[in-house]
Length: 206
Image (cartoon, rainbow, N blue to C red; front, side, top):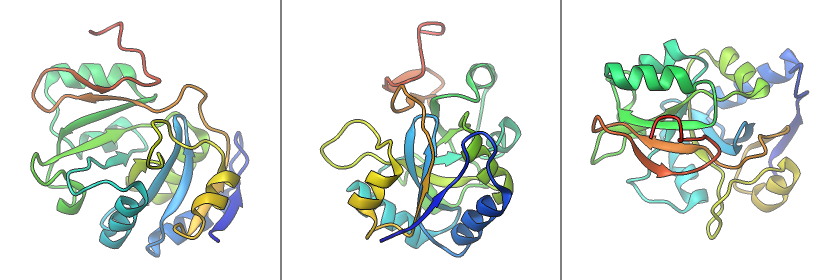
C-alpha cells in the first residue's frame, strides 16, 4: 500500500508538508487533495512519474497534463498568454479552472501535448495544495484522479489508498471541494473553448 499522511486542512503542518515534498522530489507519485477532487501528481521533469500517471488513468500520449501552480506569476512563466487570456485567467484564479495554452520553453517537452505543444495550467484554491506548492518552489505535473469508467475525480483519501494504493507511492488525506472536477478551458487558439464543464461557472464570459 501507499504511504498515508493526514494533513490539517486549515493549518497544514510544515513538517508533514516538507515530508510530502521530499518524497515528490525523490521521484514518487502521490494522490493529493485539491479544490476539485483528488489529483495524481509528480515532480516536474519526472518522466517515469508521468508514465505511471498515464497508466493509472489509462490515457494515451495525447493526454493534456496540468501544471499545478502556486500563483499567477508562476503560471505566467509556463504558457503563452495574450491580453484577453491574461485578463480572463487573472479574474478566475485561484479557483476550479484549468486553462490549456501553448507551453513556453520552461515546460519540459514530456509534459506537453506532443501534437499541439499545449499544457494545462491551474492555480488551486486549497490550503494543503498551496502549502505543498509553496514548499516545492515549482509547479507539479498533475492529472485529475478519475478512474477508468468514471467522469468525476475521487474525493476520499482512504478510498484511494484502498483502490490504488499498490499503484501509488503516497496518499495525502484532506478535504476536497464539493463541486467536482475543474472546468477546462482551451485558450490555445485565441478563442475560448469549453473542453469540460465542471465546478467553474462560465456564464460570466461566454
